[in-house]
Image (cartoon, rainbow, N blue to C red; front, side, top):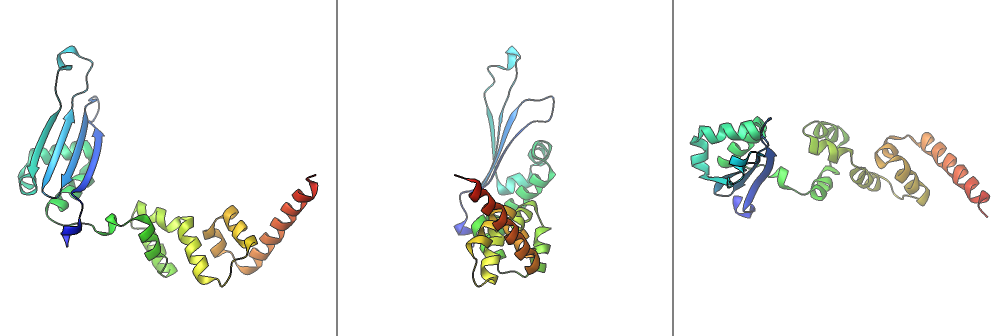
Length: 188
């Protein structure tokens, strides 16, 4: 199942904790963990320092507590846990799906499930609140969407439109027609 994974499983960059200005890269491939660093300093003795690189197999990284400590110090404990899971072969396939594919899947969920999914991560919260998702949901639940309703949705947002009851929607459409009708009459 992991054969369709890309060569690069994870990549991140970061700066060392203050007062360091050093720059770091962590790259996890299918077979290796690559840790790179660049020494950044105004001091003359460090100007000729060349970049460094440490390459470890997944198994060796799991045993290398020093490299794990450096990873946690620079990139944080969450990144370290994620890299350890990747090295153990625990891939998060859901994270690898594109936003468009996830939006299509989410659009088939019940509203309660969307609300729960929204609470699982920042990415899913962003997807669950996106206008693109709610446009799909509105289109799947409504027979037809008039140009006036579409224009109102562009102004207020598709999610807002979905949760607006029919009376409020009719009132908002009437106000919008009056507003834009008056603007058209005033134009020469």
